Length: 540
Ligand SMILES: [Zn+2]
Image (tube, rainbow, N blue to C red; front, side, top):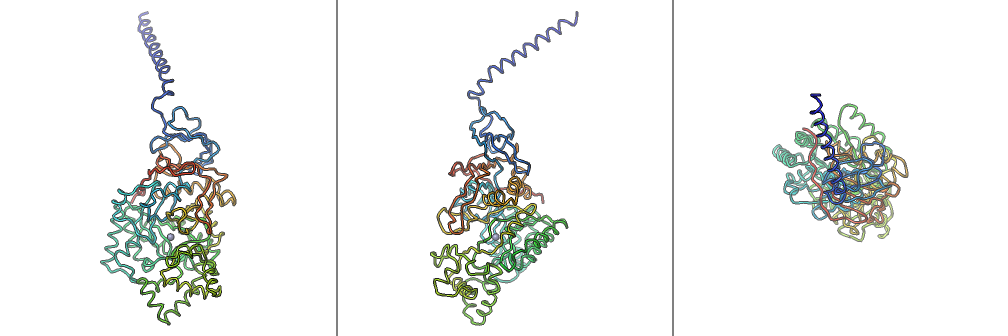
């Protein structure tokens, strides 16, 4: 009996507590639906989630609060979201990572619309041939943009700043200055060192020079990213050189826009992939990325041997004016033409010709026909020299074989990129890759040709590059990740831009969010600029 009262009292207290809780539930529940602060800022409801890890698709809701994903699960409470978007029947995936694009004009094109409309939320900007922002700190403080952006220390900019366009090795003092500029860029957040060894003046750099600069980036945990010295007949040696830089500087290496150009080399993808595999088997960290087109785009310089372009336009004109030098040049260029482009003048298409803008979109065959010249490689070489003397051009070079492109895309771990530019809709004659690379992979390689499953393609566009760069809080759809998200229709997503009519938006992407903020929806950019500059994720 002596125990009964306390027990009863405890029972009464428990009952009171239960009543009280029940009352709170009764009081709170309706109010929560009526206007308590919502639990989610955005709920993407009922979509088919492809989470970027390679896991099979599943139906689930994706809930976002602020800049983060907070839940990925079926049946999340719609009543608790500030905004619900029903995405039933559509794919919800992490935003895509473009491994290489040209962002020199980012301050003038902060929306990066031609990238974002492809579902891209993060753009890496290794600066093969272009100026790098410097000081990077000031640039990062000043520039706002829709997608996330990763910057690199650019060898071409650094070498030009120290040595101009001179065709020689740096002195010890010049090399020290170049190393200091790499060091400064890395200290300001660069993700690694990038080179464009096919271009002047980087083409004049030896592997020793590149390795000496790469070592500085390696100390910070940076990676080495390269546009190979040669993507044509010398592509295997160029890859060997890249691997050597990685070994000497003890750092991961990445080949941007892996390809094999020139009709003479078509079919070499097997040898290239075998070389990469043997390096990986030997313990090297090697990554590659690809854009899904059989034409590349670059300066007309590429059709010329580097020695003739040394020291700029005036020096080029002087050399060409000398009959013996010109004869040697013509002879080399006849061999070089099918090694770089295709095997006919029609394989070179003009993109931007400052001296004659009307040529945009036409081919070298059109150019020769209009002047009553024969459609031969010899005539094409003479025309290239004439055009170079007038300032050169940016061209589209139809010089790859789709079987090689797909072999590279199919290889395990290959990532995707655009190699695109920030374009103004309707202006100029850009390569269609600027508008269509990612939707093209999803349409052509995934849906039509079955080269990759949709899950595998999304993985290569998202978590594979994030992991490669050591970025842990992006690249998948999971609670805690930054809310970089794309919504698309897997049965209709496609590129529409062509070499003839490049200014066409892709179709099938209906929403893109960066850091939780919607930047593209329906058929329009929202104008929001929530992009962040990526921080290095790899440990030194
Ligand atoms: Zn490049």
